[in-house]
Amino acid sequence: MDSSRLVGIYLAAGKSTRMGRSKLNLPIYETWLGSLALRAALESKLEHTITVTRKGDSLKWLAPFSNREDVSILVCEEADRGQSASLKSGVKAAVEQGADGVVILLADQPFVTSAMINRLVDEFSASNEYSHLSYSQNGNSKPPVLLGRELFPSLMELEGDQGARSLIRGEKALKGKQVELNDGIYFFDIDTFEDYQALLEIWPLKGRSGDWRL
Image 1: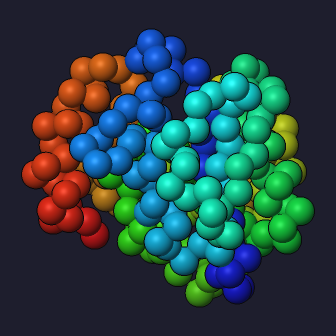
Image 2: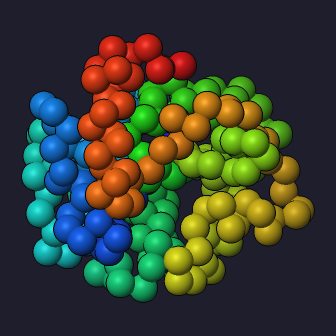
């Protein structure tokens, strides 16, 4: 299967309820939180990345990428209905681009790397065996997640805050693979101000130096 038909769906339409303000615009030294995983997606083998945003949100974090042809902005009008609404809007756009599969990425996971994304892309492209691939930490499924087009109809049936992980857990008939990666830094997500403070402490040691990357 041609990896050029794999499209990223960058979920960035959350309410940031626990943070109390738009977390994707939080500064991380010379950049912003929302920019970090997106940059990894754009440096990966994905041909295009669809950023799913919320109507009225400030997209300062997205401005550095606004002139790139490999990224597009999709405003999810029904974002208040939960993550499933953002996911479905992204899948619809990916179908219009003729995608054979999508890689689901969360905008609040700053330590996701292009190497992580490429590992999923390479395994999917090398074989028709898998309908989905994801990471696993101590036996628990973790994003990013790659879903083949045979799962698109099931994706369109998700409701509320159901995401790709709930689909993988419930999909018995189709075969998938989990890549074990037990270093929790890769899956660290930013939900609270305490998480943000921890990131500011970790970033000079890990993010800037690059010694955490696969």
